[in-house]
Amino acid sequence: MRTLLNSVLLLSVIASMALETWAIDAVRGKSYPLGKEHGPWMIMVASFKKPPEDRRTDEGLTARQAADELVYELRKVGIPAYIHLQEGRVEKLQTIDRLGREDGRVYAAQRGMISVLAGNYESIESPVAQKTLLYVKKFRPKFLDDPKSGAIYRETPGQKGPLAGAFLTINPLIDPASIQQKRDMLLTRLNTGLQYGLVDAKGKYSLKIAGFGGRQMSAIGDEALAKGASKFDRSLAGNDGMNLNLAGEDAEQLTRALRQKGIDAYCYHGRFESIVTVGAFQSKEDPRIQEFAKVFGARMKLNPATGIENYTSETLILPGPKPTDPPVKVFIFEANPTVMEIPHV
Image 1 (cartoon, rainbow, N blue to C red):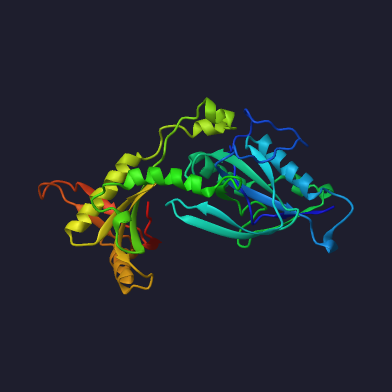
Image 2 (cartoon, rainbow, N blue to C red; image 1 turned 90 degrees about the horizontal axis):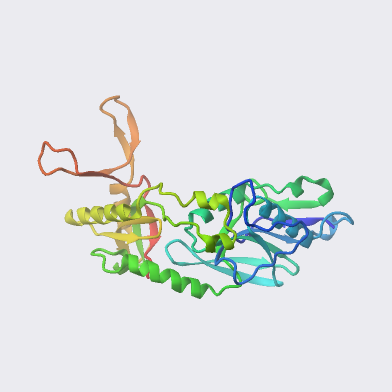
């Protein structure tokens, strides 16, 4: 029977882009069912279901066999993958975005549909999770190219590849509220006591004008390895990347500098980025948003050296103590400021 690979849905995985397997069981034909102990964050990889009656044949893999084969191929490259049997009803997949806000994705879980999920991540910002997600999106299962498998797939609109629609979400067997509570505790600590904290702004929306990124560093120990981390995961625990403490200090410094100029600026610290915003608006249609966007957004400027106009980002220069001293710091604003919801933690 031919199977239909629906690449719109995909749940999770901890994975590795390594080519050699390490500490991950991979046996063709063996079942690896999803459990509550997996995750809590995972990659939704793909969903399989029976094809329409007019596209079925007497040969090829069943939906369950195709799901098992995908799990096997992912595990062979070091990515712990699992299968999850979905019930026949419309469901809302509740997840959380990077700012701790609820993000619901609605999909139809048809009767007999089987999802493949992968990974075991502690947070959505995990470097392993982010790099594995990119790898999974480009991964092409070998069995799809085997005419004997009878498998067909529907590409995600605007994206190439059978797994291009993969995304990070919470293990569907775990209550999202428990993950939200754990996340809120960290974000609350990061944003408590700020002089100009965005979480204290009196509004629903603000305009992001600058971001200072960094990396969250954590060693991969025995506990993580027991959950399926690979040699590739270990390589992500290095000391490269901008220090988040420095990123946070830059964001707060820029916020203070803007406040000194009479601008309604705010600061917010996330796990991987500290941001600076301006304004607190009740509506996305507030005319002040466009006014701020024109002030801080990039514009065409004449280059004195070349005499040519270039699209140039705006900057804020903090001068040195003396006129002859070099600038203390130069802040570069985002070329296209974006409206965002004000997070509440």
